[in-house]
Image (cartoon, rainbow, N blue to C red; front, top):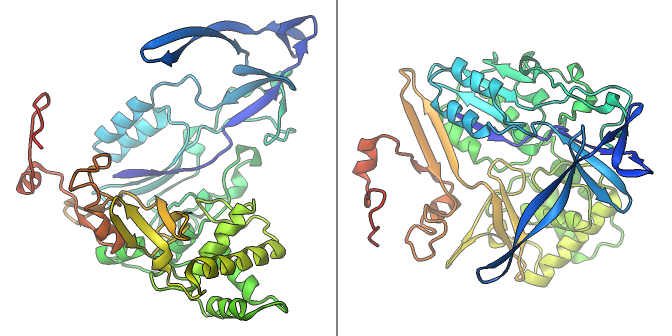
Length: 452
């Protein structure tokens, strides 16, 4: 079994080209003028109905890569993995692999430019890889900014070898994890990759999401994890004491509020007694998620997918909290609102209250609706938990937040898994033919008309 999480290494660069004042199709490279490669790209435009028209647009290419002209300059783009077309072949080989060596070889030779990868198998092997085509860049430049496009020093052509990428194999701790977080805290103990071994211009993340902090705390605090405990850990809805949310809570409750009215004082009392959990009855979760919402609306540097504090100032935090209090009063008439009344799974006629929240392991992110409630739109979706027993037998359970008929509103399976999802329950995942036939609703062969 294997799965991906998103990583964000620095894999792309933008170069400012020095264009020949006597020839707009030449650029300086070291001590000579080179010609831009000029092509015409046919673009089909639909006018109306079936009537289309093909226009041609000029495209330019340099040693660095594709080129775009703007009013303020001419720029070249370079990104890791461009020109590679073997990603589908790599995924096919990974799926067909029967052992770790074959699977890892597919990773080593493939064209997938990034993603964290977690691996486990029936033999008990576990493995984490920070997969990335990391360019080997020259020192002396700030690779996060525009770069000079007139020197071979900035033209990287090689990448860090696969064997030198951050990775962990069968650590003594017994677990690996990643939740869009730093590879340097993948597990506990000395097997972690060391951040000091990697140049800053690789752009490897050092941030820790709350989800990764909680995984380290939960897995690291349990020497023998049963499958039921594994399921419980998946649905953990707690913010770590090390998280940005915990720091925000401490700041808000530890700050002097001379202007506080009755609603603000009650809200501070709720937050002061909050246990950092996002269970359905939590009032503190409601206040904090609204505060985070208003922080992001105000343009504060919080990543919506992983709430990481990046320089949020106390005045901005206080203002967001006051807006959260005002929002609750406006829509609900009070500030002590249970989280499940606000946090909703809405699908057709289904409208269910949820626990969980932003950047907890039971991840739920919502968009604010006109009625003041959050409609869940991302986070946990298809969930599958898999385990192998001592004899190599596999067991898997899964859930989808809606159902298997994701596009057919008339189907009974359009939202038939939503209730189970809201209750944090899982169903068996059937893989072999006997199991599938034992639970078969209907069958057909390709080309046959499907009876409804």
